[in-house]
Image (cartoon, rainbow, N blue to C red; front, top):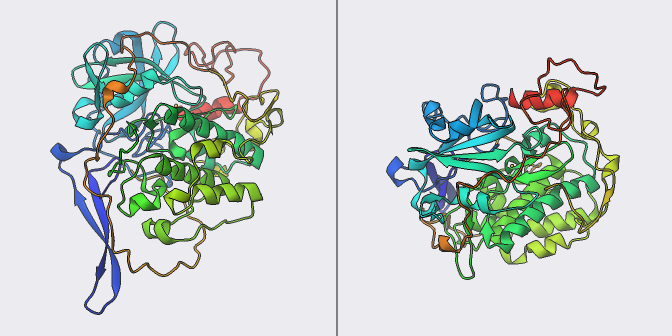
Length: 484
């Protein structure tokens, strides 16, 4: 059984044998009652499932995911009540999911722009609560993000709660563009730049696994990118702890990124599922299409390459997307792979040369040509720093079909099992940070602004100020378009 993020719909895929002897695949659909809902992830921390891209909430393109109406009447003033409103001013809603919504905000003390995620307490399932050091019960997602510190994972600046909501304030990273939006704009990526972007995702996952943490929803929509090609992993609403011998029976992510063995109803340890999801992400970044068209294609269909790539990249993709979980590469093997460790001359890349922010270029948001910050002026080789220290997926075409092998007669059913996980690591093993702690610093400021380059993410920057800076405004316009 699979829970569809952002909805109350569950489904099971089975094989039935008709009286004629013919075998058919059947999909059984159902609706979970609210009091039995166990899936608790807000479909996006900043840009994720449901109708919660950092695109304007009222300006969705045909490629957007289905609208989630579950919070239509809940994303109001009640969310900002309490201590949060003493420190932050909420500007506008930029996304929503089944269990909360996301809004732009700024900090009163210094007018720093940030992103606030509001999590409805009543929607957080029992297995997603942990004990904070002060004795309070908090969502696992919040406790993790307050604990994690990595340049490729979104940072939490502040956290508050009122009677009904947790209020999590996160850094604003660049223009808030996720990799789905990035890919929709048909970036002109060569393999070195592609490896640089993907290496950062690998580093984030490597860090998480070193702490025995599974993200469980790695996909292009949960990675945001700035104009220096610096990426960060977001949305930890599906995250959990893993331990040797522990198997999970519920999949909380997106079916397009789910591995064959889990779609077939098998329990999973975690890293093998994560590697498959990363493989799908790399494939989509490379070819701009999904490799498989549906569940059956994922389980039995061949891996097709729409156009030639280097031998090293093809070998890596086949390794990551091996149908047999035991044959898939591990995270250490991934990070040691020659394709991922190639040197990248970042000074040769400018965002405006790679991505076009015009709507006509294939992106659903931008209205002007993209302006990029200049590349970081040095080569980045293997092991060097990569930056300074955030339901159903949005529609995308699949790779051209190839002749599929005959159905395996022994494969009669595939269901993801009961909705409860087999077990989970005790929450006490997480090093939790006190929710009352202050922000550790300003969000990274990577985008030029007309009224000063020191703190471009501060609200003191207004487009109507008259300044003499001689620079292309197109990236600023792209940023404004992403949040307008």
